[in-house]
Image 1: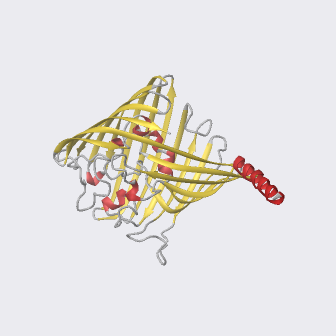
Image 2: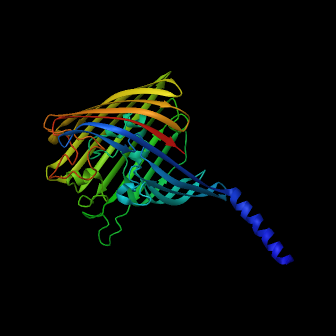
Image 3: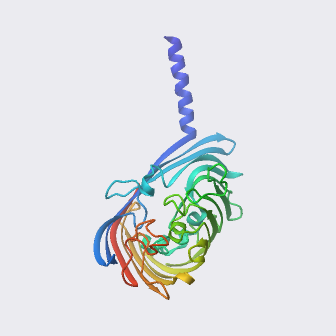
Amino acid sequence: MRNQVIVAATAAVFASAAHAQSSVTLYGIISEGISYISNSNGHSTFRMESGVTSSSRWGFKGVEDLGGGLKAVFQLENGFDINSGAAAQRGALFGRRAFVGLSSDRFGTLIAGNDYDFIYDYVTFYTNTGQFGGDYSFHLGDDIDRLAGEQLHNAVRYESPVIAGFTAGAMYSFSNVAGSFAGTSTVPRAMSFGLKWSPNGSFNAPYSVGAAFTKMNGGQAAPGAGSIAAVALGSDSIYTAAVGAQATAGQFSFNAVYTYTNASDTPHGTVTVNAYEGGVTWRPSPMFLVGAGMAYIDQHKLGKYNITSWGADYHLSKRTDLFLVGTYQHAFAGAKYANNFVVVTPYSQSPANPYGAGASTTANQAVVQVGIRHAF
């Protein structure tokens, strides 16, 4: 009996020590609203939509202190539709993020699994969507420049520590197909690189800048495996270079983004796309902001688009806010129909159906949503 007490006490001590050195956090965002779409498949409509200002999600992230500044880290993050309860990312359980790795205060972080590329992590913050607008403001229904956030599977990712305000990263995504290291039409391989800077090394600074590059080979014949744009254009090789910046002056902040996308081996030959975006946000109080901005998308061979977006957000608390966002898209110079992101069904675009399910039957499409968002 005495030995059992000693063993139990010893186990309790070690369990307490382990608990003190590690932690697991449950977190999430729930976003819900009512949207009005001026023209989708030829009809105006009202509909409930989840995750327009922030994708609805929940997840776990954890850290274990291994000593000497070294930690084991992991993150599992699920996206979902609050209206149906269905998992996002084509039904994947942890389709947003799922990785494990090691992090060092001195040497940086190395992880392996499923994660976003550096365009999303280093540049999307500077978009009009990231500052004040809804996901409708991302660049077209096929997310032509990956700003809306797309994952790389089977990936190894390294991110440096902050050095003089700079952080750099590199990422490689394996095809996992024997004899097809460079990817196939159904299974891609990809690489991504990123660099960001601010006075304190984070986005929470008076001014900051971020740049990223992502290239993908293959995956154009398999929705969900490759990028949305690669499937839409039928491109065997596609890459995007992106840069964004923000500066704050008093109650106002200014954001700008430029992206260049090159998609080769498409039915149209090589398609290049230049996207320019800028916006301004006014924050008269910590609880309230309004913003507006524009984007110009030049797809050269395939036409051009103007996207105007706006948004207003009022916080009832640090975790709960009410919002009103809107987007107006105009197609011209060879582009026949407007096709806002989210309005168009993901992966419904293809060389045979370039505008996708949900596109307007005219050159214009307006979308507005009012809703509530809660973080936990």
